[in-house]
Amino acid sequence: MYDILVYMTEVGIEQEIRLFLEDEDFNIHMVESFDDVIEICGQEMVDLVLVWPCEVDATKDLITLLSAHHFDYLPVVPIVDSEIPAGDIVALPVADFIRLPKSKAVFLKILKNVLSDVGSQRGTNENGDWAGSLDEYNVIDLIQMIEINEQDVELCIRYNDFAGKIYFKKGKLIDASFQDKTGMAALDKLAFWPKGHFQIRSVNLDDMPENIQRGNQEILISQVKKVFKIESLLSELPGLTEAVMRNPLVSGQKLTPLQKEIVDICQKPLTVLAVLLKISAANEDILSELKVLMQSGMIGRRNDIELLVQLEAEKSGLGKLIDSMSSIFKKKTEFDFTYADYEMPEEDQPRATLEIPPVSLTQEENGQIIEKLETFFK
Image 1 (cartoon, rainbow, N blue to C red):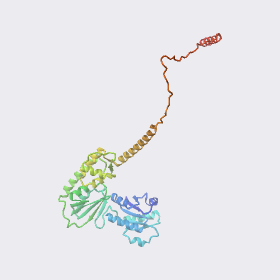
Image 2: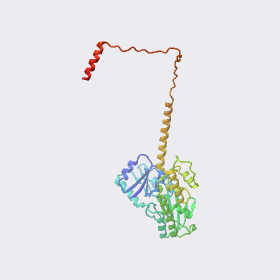
Image 3: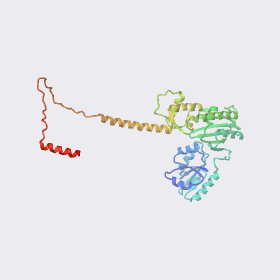
Image 4: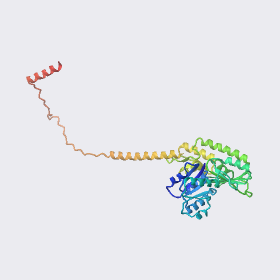
């Protein structure tokens, strides 16, 4: 299956692209920004880049961008409408171009011929260079494969905005570079990457000193042990490509310098892999401290923290509403009752008495009552 990245220069054309490319042996990535182009190229093993529809200036800018990020080996194919002269396209460093309108059958035939002509990045080019995905071959695999070929090469690996290089002289690993690190310190930061893209380039390293003096087998054993240690720590942590972030609801904890560095860079969501690559400390130390921070609640999975913050906001809003309503009901109206003065009578004054006259019934009324009672009890 081919991975095709489609850079869309217009909005709302996804359906048109799907009509041509769906239901085929393609894995399609459609993006509208240069940032997304670089992100996909860094994470996936892209075989071909389509510019759809072609705009000459946009295509030039895209090719420049790919070159600046070391993706200049990717073939670019513009999808051209009838209004753009062929000469403007041929002048660009593109693998080919396809002019529309065409039927789907004709379009796919041309596209597959282009893929066949330019080849896939899964193979080597005429210089013996080779590129691929770290999903298929990890760094430890690549070190062993390069050793067998006994060539002078540099292994370039990339994940999003992170990039590093490992250098081999006649198959022997002699140096590595990553950010401000070199030698074994840089190799330790590169050897465990589970995601990203690699490219092996033939270079002349006659003048490069051997910054790493160990043999390849010793290096491999050391790195395998480190990878096992990382995997063991990750068994109790989120995966390397899972995002974590600081919990703003937890504060006041005393932190070590490394813990503080982790908390500071996790103010915004970051993958665990990005945390390891942004901090210069040893990967095992970072993961150990990250575990402590997650157990304390200071750091958490992005989804969990965002949910907690949302619930707290809703709870806070409800609390304010209740307080507001309570304050309203607490404001009771005060009535001013005026009572008439009442004087208790003096002891020697006569008290008022209530006289009730005795009940007096006529003989006829007594007879009627007796008659009703006798009827009731029969």
